[in-house]
Picture 1: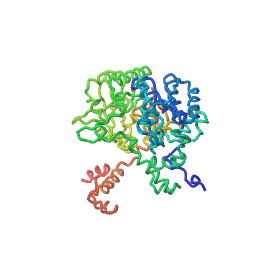
Picture 2: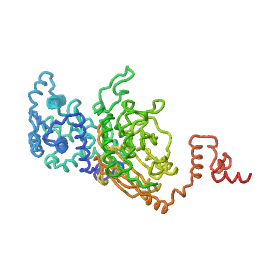
Picture 3: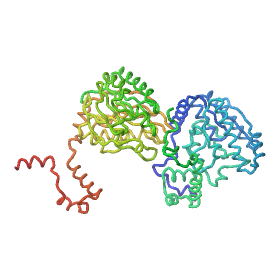
Picture 4: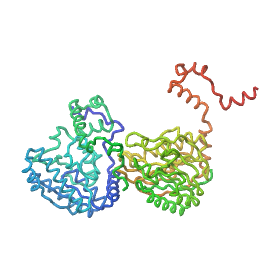
Length: 285
Length: 316
């Protein structure tokens, strides 16, 4: 019997299904307001060919119009050829003018100097080179950088600090991967992009779910119980999740906290940033 | 009460920008006047925006501040109910609602229940109010609540017991997204249920004005609504978009509701007080807490009840 058959319905306060039209209204309104309030009109984002950036790009085009959105396609020589193909397909659908910037020479030059050749370090370099390209374009075009990390990745720490985790605005950071999928269908993201196995595409044949060792569908249900409903370990085990999985996921969430917070500042004054110098990010905008 | 045409001004205040928000208010006041309204209601913290944190003292106003003079001037033509940070005596900063009428501040309510949990941190930024008082608005007895106040049933109940016939709820309520089974964004349906029930329980009009707009990723839901004393919707604004709705509060409807459902008439205030006294003794371990109910009734000093007092006087 599968674990899902054993698992009861999620308790009432946890609902992974979303109303896609109303959610789209909230998220497009968010993008419009947050871009306008800083006095800028444009946004820039990396379009990878995957579902997350396809959703963010679609939301941005709906919010601001295609002329205000600059999707950058930033392949590396080892990137899967389908990634670029899907990114180009999205560009066509969105009617936005994108730009392809091959990051191979930048990454390879860095790797040669630093010796970052093993997959993890090289993957981090790729993510940070893409971030550098995006923030350079942000300054050049007065365009805010949009983040494309979803809630599952953010909670598990499945991203590169100062790399793909860096952005000014993230419209999908409170949506689990399975919710992003539902929204993608509503936004008309092609099935080929929605249905392919998710991948960070940092090395050939990489797969998120193989890296992580569980499926997004399973971990999203678990995270919804642990994080949103604050259910106990005993409670989620009773709900049908394997204790080993629960412990592993809990360790991942706790262990990646540093990726979700600004650096720790040692307090040696009366009013310190982060402690008692408290203003919203939207302070006086 | 007298008939009252009320305008619900669902605006998106600019965070920390009093001047911009004053303009927003004056514009809505004009539109409300053109539609014949006698009162225009704005959301919680409508003059300042919500997520102020350390900016609270920067945007706080004493009620005699000249920056309120344009609104007070406008209130000679139409009553205005606004949300602001009031700087009170002792430099206490309150999340307050001020009812302006005839060029004066007629009444102020300071938010009593400051949510300090989940996404809220108001208990850190504001001083809490300490009373719920009904006041005489030009159209009749009314009461003010600010957002979280409405989630404590005792708050509207007290105002209704003091005679309020119209309750105003000013709100900066953020949504928690949108789920499939709800008509709209999640918080709007929940609020509408609460307000409809409150109006029906207390047989009062309830006028709820919630803001829209975004601050730091919080999205405020709107969904402002006016409900009659039967709990029926009189006017409503959509979620998430700014708007202005005008509706008439009809005293005849109030009379019919209170005739059909004399819930307020039948309220047993004395019983409520006795039970509250008992609860307080238990909760705070006051003398007598160790007694069981029967002993407590005989041994605790009995307080004279409103009906008992004249009886004793007659006996003398």
